[in-house]
Image 1 (cartoon, helix red, strand yellow):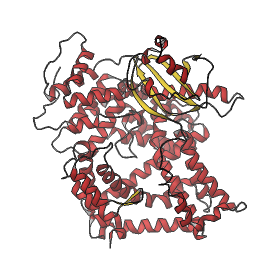
Image 2: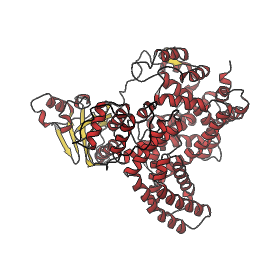
Image 3: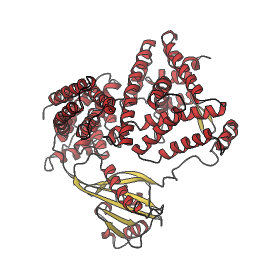
Image 4: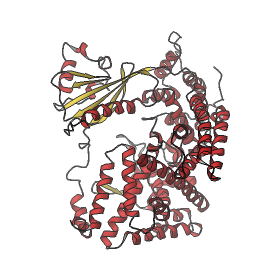
Length: 629
């Protein structure tokens, strides 16, 4: 196995090991919210090329958005992957450029449809190449190069990491267990090294000694070069308010088990009746599944295949099956899907999420709940309870839609969030919802995105997951940065800026987290850097808003769409809806039209942006007057 590049003794593998840890390969993204990785952008192009509906002028902006997303994604892949995909990317890009030119030139629908049909083979060729081991290997090399430099850069690490994770998932290497195994191999855990070696050659000798880092990287590359092996995938779900009168009921690929009986069988002499993946004593298996009297467990057997997202596919099978019953006149309100799952690969459960009833997730205790205080502090919004006030009725509807959207899948939630925006945009004369967003919401979104990024990075660094602190210094810095008000923490912009400046030198801030902190420090390192960040976010907004418009129209009017792109818009669309909903609440409190509130928010954000060059310092440029005493 050739060693692709040399690794010095001083190289720190912790960044690479951290980049290899993921829970859901198809939904987790590290790069900026507006960026699409090459896999997601290519899936979207293929879906639009496959659409057989006749081109019309209403699809002009949607097609230009698809083309722009694809073109941008190809410029942000690593050098090795860029080289591997060069010919197929060049072919498809040329065809997309020709299509865009034809659209701009207002050629006839027949001419444009012919160009779309001609681009389909190129899209399929690229899609096939993205499934190849060569593409995964190239993405692996790019990720290693990005992480193992002396000073890794966040943009490079996040982009190459996203490309590798999504390409690995295409080849069937997207499992959470594999992510942990690769991470352990990089860090030199001997059991992981031996396990990966046996996966490559079951009859090969054990290494028996610590491998140098560059040999461990080569071992990972050798494993990823193997043809994607079909594995048997079984996913377990739980349904509450349900029962069976026997142990098992089969329906095609789904076996339903009554939870109390299944647990009783597991502890009795008939344990052999359990499915293979529940036979062992895995801590992730049956003992993690609920056993209440109103719970039925659903075992979805997807068979042997190379799958990108087995859990999602299994959930689709289960929801579709139950939907057949529910929409055929038997909607009893029972058999409600709980959150959580257990995913077994080749008869071994290796990944699970805790099972919870959707309305029983842990929240604040009753003593900590601030609802009474919040109700007392907001007497001006009691107008929302008026039964015959049209504006109050619309506001209640918007609140309900936002609340319901949180319990829905991404596609349905996106439609509801856009509906909230449409509701308030319609109150302004001659404003389409996307024009309303560009004029009124965009300026504040850019500003708040900058401030929120600082808040999120500082908070994440000072609040490690789990029960242990990163170091005593981190705990001390957290105490300086945050104060407690009951069960809530409070801080100030100046405290966060001070903490951010000190994080990079604080013991315990290492690996990927250190790279992220340094990347953010560069973004706020000078007023010039802040201005450049602001301008980049404006471009990101344009891409996101155009993407949201095309997805909304596709969902509402029957056009092409992909789950991957819808997922990429989930937090963006939710934030937009919540922003304009808060404006609606403010309008009711102040007894003003929402247009007045929206204009004030727009003007305030625009004034902040105009002051960036003359703010006096980078922190003042970001936080403006909120940072001044």
